[in-house]
Length: 329
Image (tube, rainbow, N blue to C red):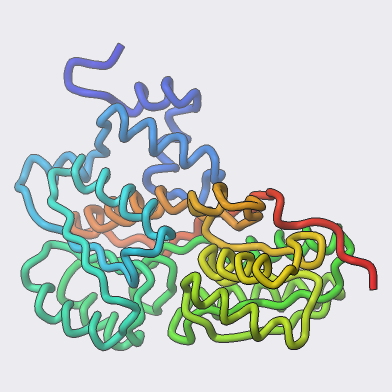
């Protein structure tokens, strides 16, 4: 039974079947808790309406507005981030405004210049601005960057390097010796990190890795990637995101190239569509809901006058039907 003053950390711990100390770590320092446990705790806390002390103090003080900036609101990779941030902001008594920059750094900078004075905190998801611009806005309002590390600015990222290494290990066990990376936008920090992770894995596992791209992070970008790949095909590809991977698979199907019989394909993001496509897409899952919740919580902590280091949350490989044994020569 919950206490009369509202749900406590002990109520969350009981419902999530973990220790209260684990709940505390998941909500304040999520990098110290496993992917599955952190996601479960945050969902239970949201369902019970539990608020940590910094969040409750903000709620008691006033209603305000927070701003979440995303590179492309039509990209399903941002759905979990938006849901987590909305839930956390609502629990803290804040209105969350969402801004779509259409993958444009200059447009993002122009819109933030107009909005910064009107909001109480800013979360940048997939920012395309240069580091110098991000640091300038961080001096004006509490600000946190998601899926990118910027020096002197608090950041929340998923462990993309580890995720790419798990993907390479999975393909290596299937006998693949050549892997192509289908790159994303040149301005994407995550793109360079994911390519670095695959490159490092290739050296560790004695796999040949090549990079194709950049491509737009869309289905059309995946179709373009297929046309480039077919000029020098490999037995496996790992894409910057699920949309590129799905566009690649669809183009392969139209051209009679069987997945995974002829080429194995891995995406990144674990979007809902990746499960619904045929064949179901093997992909790297990031804890996007937890990233959204943690981003808002850290904004509130920052407004309390506290500063926390950047946090790295774990990723995991979700194996489905789009990967299989390497074809014989």
